[in-house]
Structures are given as structure tokens and as C-alpha cells.
Length: 179
Image 1 (cartoon, helix red, strand yellow):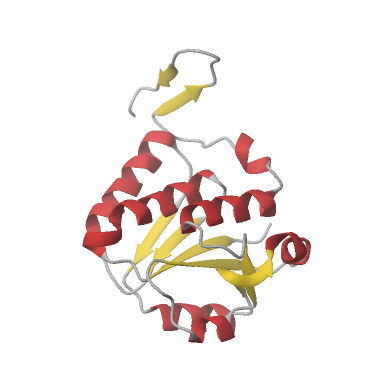
Image 2 (cartoon, one colour):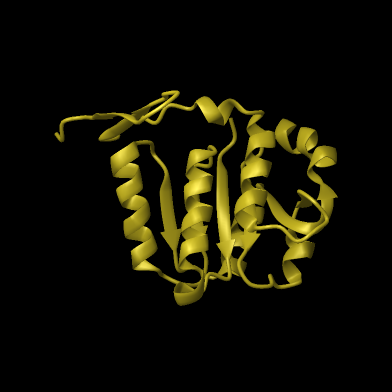
């Protein structure tokens, strides 16, 4: 299966930390391999995601600080695809089969503030979840769910200290011994 990376463009540390954290949590839970937060370093976000992976498992990673143009240029020159989630794009229902069938690695770009117009021309795909304003967190979740056809909802994350056991009522948690 191709690698799937999320690129967060325009993260403003003081203003966007909660939403960017939710982008990262959604990317991890819905099957992405990792997230790149471009242009800035947010050590608090990095620590939060490292704690989540340590606690709940998996091999998810986060990288920060590189300029988005360099990230995108290197990605595309490497023969990979860039999918930009935007309300101005082709409806996900019309694009997802072709995107899914491509063997190339994929980077999904989601903005915080208004993304540079240049990104539209660089993207292999400009994809909309809806042609209405929508949260980047929900757009990412819907895109990844369509991409993985729901399989990500049953994913097992190995190596964590905590395992949640599904329960109709109450909370069932297994805490594993720290090694």
C-alpha cells in the first residue's frame, strides 16, 4: 500500500494549536503514516503527538519546520502525488477511485489559514469533500475514510501502553506494563 502523509500548511502556533492537534490525531487514527507541519516548529504539538503514540501505539510520526514549497517540490519530484483538500476541487466521490488505484505515495495538504494559490497548480488533485466551507479536520477524516473504505476504523495499533476495549456502556481500558 502506498505511503500516505498529511501536510499541514499555515499552522500558527498560538492560534491553531488545538485544530492542528486534531488534524494530527485524525490523521493518525484514520490511517496516515505521519504528518508534516510546514514552516514552523511547535514543540508542544510534537510532545503531544509523541505521548499519544507512546500511550496508544502505532508507528505514526510528526515532522516540522521545513518550508512547504520545498516539501511539495521534493515530494512531486520524487514521483509522488499531492492531494489538496479544498472546497474548490473535484468532488471526492468523483476522484477517490482513481486516487486509490494509483500505486504512488500520497501527500494530503490541508490548510490552516488561506493556502497560497500556487498550491492549486502544484496539486495532482484538488479534491473537495463538499463545495461549502468545512473544517479541515472533518474534511481529512472523510477523505481518509473514503480512501481506506472504512478499514481504518478497525485498525490495531501495536506497542501502546493503553488499549481501549469497545463497550456498550462504561469504559474498558487495559493498561500494559511499561517495559
